[in-house]
Length: 305
Image (tube, rainbow, N blue to C red):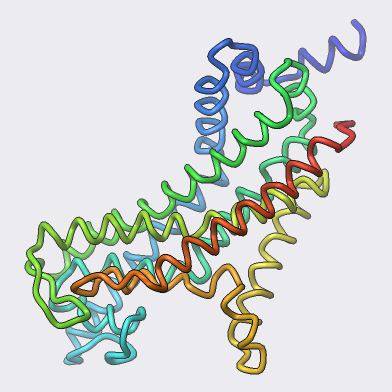
């Protein structure tokens, strides 16, 4: 048996299905479904989603214990718009655990999970020796890269919804639910509050799209999945630190995480869109710039693995 035949024989059934999806005339649906299924079934992905789902549970239990000890508010009191202010409202309405959990996970946990998936998207395939098989069929590198990015966008949404769903379940179990008092001080019904929570979850997922494109670009620079994941998370930490340095305030509005917590403005009545739209615009710029850089690198890359 030739070396090429042995390599083909060593391919797992999952990878064979993925290559078959590329050859399918309905490529767009086939490869997207195959790539998304493969990503979500990996133990690493399931572990990341499990950690994200556990964060609201820990926050809810902590607030419940603190309330039982006689504290009238969650940690941090009532600073406007951020996680601490949401925490102070959780004891009155469990729906606020959704907002508090998203505020707690967005700066670190959610982007780190996205960074791991994005960093491994191309480099992991190259390291495993499956990337060249995906490129054997005449699907083209551009389409494959678009499929990879689409899968990352899907993961951003799934990860955010996992946090929101876990927080909603825990909040309803541990605390009363009912009418929602907005940041502006007005009251909206529980149904509208749920809609606002859904809108916030989608907005948070959209806030991660720029970083996902950056991770995709990093993943095209190396054939080591671990190196790409580490580099992507390293960039995240570095940018987060820069965004906290007052002397560098001039560059803060151009950093991808700067407007992440602007989702709090969606809980005003009426909704305040200024910073929220700035955030979406900034993510679109990052997605365009680093998506283009990833395409330029990937289409010119010599695939040897």
